Image 1 (cartoon, rainbow, N blue to C red):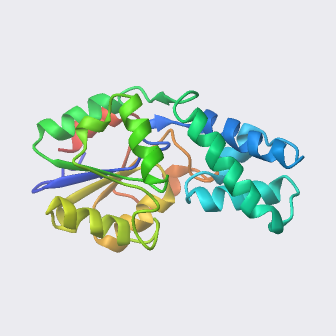
Image 2 (cartoon, one colour; image 1 turned 90 degrees about the vertical axis):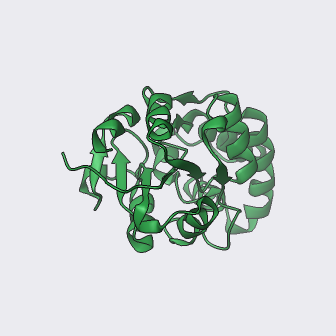
Length: 220
């Protein structure tokens, strides 16, 4: 296994990487769709839609349920309300996730969480699950003008961390994370258990894959 040398920092994704939040998404989305008299979506469909930000999730879920695009504002408002109520209730930290963060911190790396989830929801979730203290910065999908897979969030996180992108390890669970890292010039590892829009994650261009976040120790 190759090892990364000279790393200064690490940027870690949230949903599908640190915490399994699919249950929260399913409950909040289906509650919002129910308010609009639309049918609920199965978890397998919701999982395929996760990862590109809340706006994309709500628009896509609305279409999957047969709702008109004109219902988007009402669906968005309902989703935000319901997600705020259930955030973290149906979510669980993945085995090895906290150990992986501890490994990164003990390696002397500065840590940021960069997610397409809204920042407020992300911070609340990390706090609930006992992970917030590991991070010097948390940036959500509303923090910058563009979201992953655009490299902007990673580049801005590197700026905040005071690290060079080439010396900042990115850890995520999807092609979005990998594409953003490649465009930013950062090394990237992907976990094999998260959400990748229904596609095999090991087919994604990445430097390596982790069965558990704890396995990052073998790369440092």
